[in-house]
Image 1: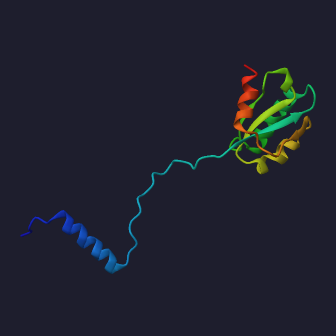
Image 2 (image 1 turned 180 degrees about the vertical axis):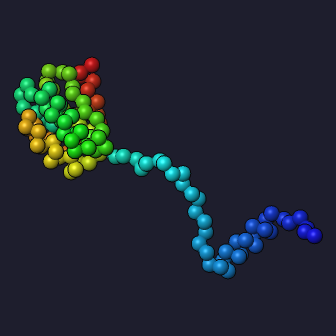
Length: 128
């Protein structure tokens, strides 16, 4: 009934049929469920003198109230006394978070330029 076909000939015929039908080639399907990579940067927040703990409590309230968990990825506080009025924030989007941070009364300034990873590591290593 059917002769055993050469696999290469069959592939060649299918490719020829696709050309005739002018169908675009099939693209491999990517597995769903893997979110795109999040690009984040570290930003330095200066808080009022001796008000870092108050800032952190208010920051937690602002994060919960405005559902900013996806935008504020990490909060770090260097232990070294040189950095006692500094908080480091790892942000997915500076623009989306800036106004929320600035509404916290004990916040003096959030630096608009992200910190290099080496500087963040140095500040956090000094706290160890």
